[in-house]
Length: 128
Image 1: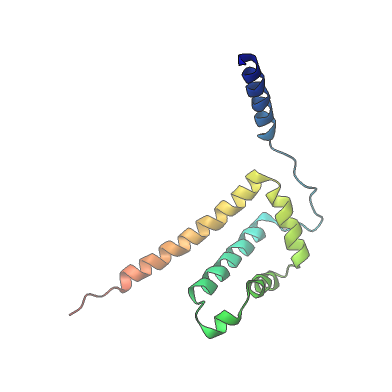
Image 2: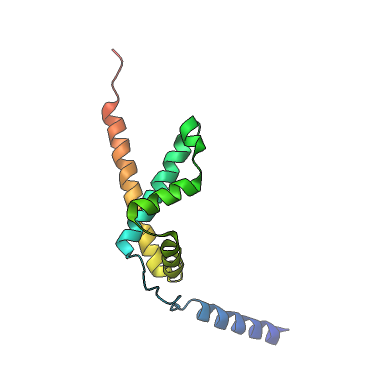
């Protein structure tokens, strides 16, 4: 029984060590979106999503679908949906690169949130 457990642990360890290695990912598309532009696009998409969620009860905003918001960002950046999809697949196949991209998006969103919080703090007036 102990020998079987040892073999099982050895196999599990071997599988785990191979799965942790950085993979090459998908082939790089010819029209790959540069990392900086990908950060900008993902940032805009998350802003649109947050805006839609905040104003979801507004009649005009309620008419919008998520695909409308998605395509508005693509149009703003002049990128075809197929190019964006290929770039997302490529970057997501490289976890370290994709994490770096998303960390920049999160950092920008956090900075925006901090700026909004500072403005709220400044605008608070005590009652007279």
